[in-house]
Length: 291
Image (cartoon, rainbow, N blue to C red; front, side, top):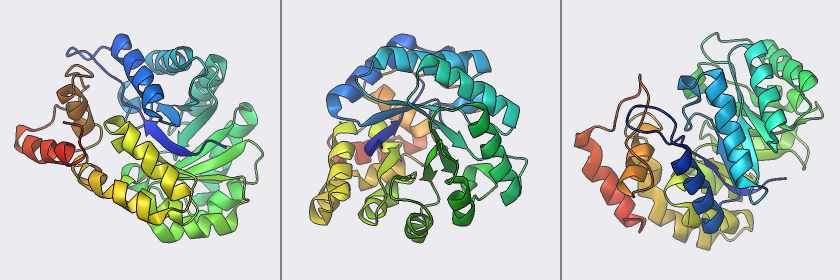
């Protein structure tokens, strides 16, 4: 089981919107050096919604190739079309990813039975380990804990990213699944408490800019050292909040550009971070000691 701080890594881009492979490789190297526990490539933060299928597969393959076994790579392969999700999941398996992360089908609002059948079909078609991803604020569909428990009985469904921020769900998910089923927070602001309640890690936006601190906080929380985890998390609280002043990944890409780690590239319909918010995010970065 992969545990700890799993960075939902950005997809660096040049100002014209083309993928910056050099910056991507440098970010992966930095995360290895800083103690990040896994890379989650081409998820929400990686702008999966604006990459075409060829680019999506290429970005996953680049992450696996450059990580070169130094750090696990989980590939984001979810889609609102089951056939497209199967195709992307096959790409990830062919590239050598360690696992896939599959967001609930967005926009078309399937029923709980539809969610079960969707994930069952993908798991049957591609035998790579698969992690469910529930983020109703993005998708307009909420995968209930009871549905997760049912899907978790499928052999190669190995975990869930629960991004509602509802801590009661962490407890309920643990009750409904086996001890070897991974539960990840997808909400940085409540991740520490989630891990103290039994979650296995955090698939994190904040880890993009503060990887060492997030790794240390997650390790402390998983070990049950509540005081140490709280101490570290207090320095990160501003980031957990201010990195969502506009839609993710707008603020985190601006922060990385401020740190000199990528250029000012993002794809429409996302736009560059509004100047009116710059001082707030800079202050949070200073609080975290990264500026």
